[in-house]
Length: 225
Image (tube, rainbow, N blue to C red; front, side, top):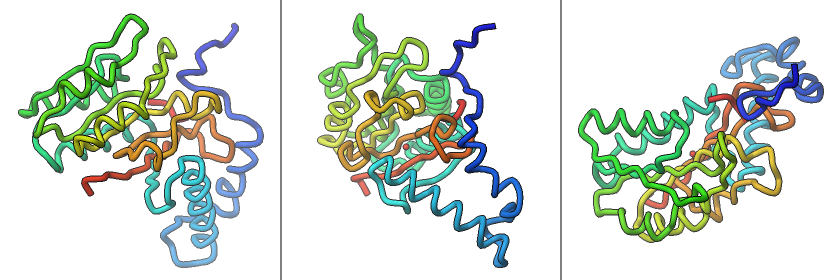
């Protein structure tokens, strides 16, 4: 069999397994425990958090680890919307991963107004179209950085700028793009992004199956989905 499904999941690289080794063995402790083994686990966790923050262009305190992309997307989209920083209107693109689309549709079932942005013939969201649908009660915008199906790379910097001008938190699902330097999502500081999810499965030294979500809201987001 020739395996071509690495957008879904990948075999574990040997260097990643080696980096994980101490935490599967002698440093197995609970990082919240106040003893030698727990302290070793905590040191490893915080070093990983610092490494992820550097890759994201964020601060370490802004990075939250989750079990995977689906949890990260649910936490970001539902969490921001339920906090209702502005109202009960949610905007997502029509080509989002189900983790985002189903989160938005669930919000719709409990009374939120959900707008699903159509894309053009190349699968792209027009920043002008986003600007046209934003309202005073728009509480979060979510647009995937790179498609897990066709590979379209969205202009998230431009989309985030549109959202920022309207004071709306912006989330991007960057699960598919973190491993590709020429397609990597712009830094959190450049995006002024509300939150974004980044995967662990393809990042060297990151634990397979984990996802990092970085949060930064101006009104104050590779693992499998």
